[in-house]
Length: 240
Image (cartoon, rainbow, N blue to C red; front, side):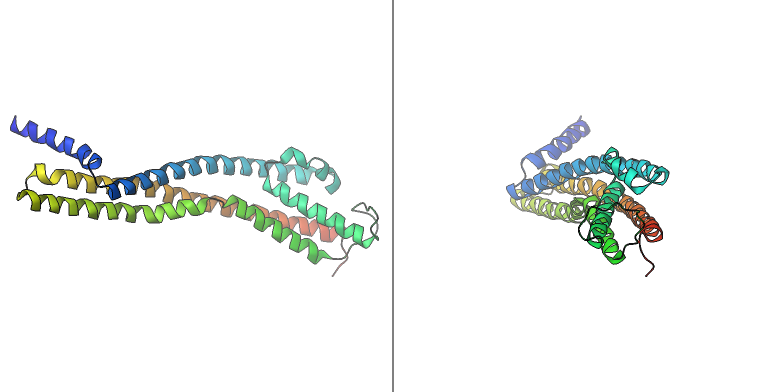
C-alpha cells in the first residue's frame, strides 16, 4: 500500500508541478506550445505546397518540350498555374516580346520572325530575377522552423533550470528532501525539457527536409532556364 501511495503522489506531482508552476515557467511552456502548433501548421502547408509545385513542374516541362512553338506554349501556360517553372517561362517569354518590340520600333512583333534579336543579356537577367523570386517564395516560412528548432531546446532548458530551482526552494522551506517535496519542481523541470524537445525535433527535421526539396526545385528552375536560353539563342537571337 505504501508503494502504491508513492506512485500516486508522483503522478499527481507531474500535473501539479505544471499547474502550480510560476508564471514565468508557465509563460515559457505556453510559448513553446505556440511554437510547436505554428511549426506543425507550416509543415503541413509547406508539404502540400511543394508536392503540388513539383507535380505541376513535371507536367509543364513535359508539355513545354512537346509544344510546337513558344507561342503555343505561352497560350496554354495558364493550364499550369501551380508550376513555378511555368511562371519563369511566362516572365522570360514576356521579356522576349519586349525585346522584339523594342527592336522593331515599338511595333507588335511575333517572336520567331525572320529578323534576329539582340539583347540576350536582358533575357538572362530576367530569368535570374524570376528564379530568385520563386526560390524566395519556396523558402518562405522556413526560417520560422529553423528558429523553432534552434531555440526551443534552450527555452525548455530555461524552464528546467527554474523547475530545479523551485525544488531546492521547497527543500529549504520544508527542511526535507522527500519525494513529496521535490516531485512538483522536478516534474515541472522535466516537463519543460520534454515540451522543448517536442517543439524542436519536428521543426528541425522538417526544415532539413524542405531545404532539400527547395534545392531540387532550384535545380529544376536553373535547368529549365539554361534550356530556354539555348532555345532562344539558337532560334531568335543573333550570335554574340
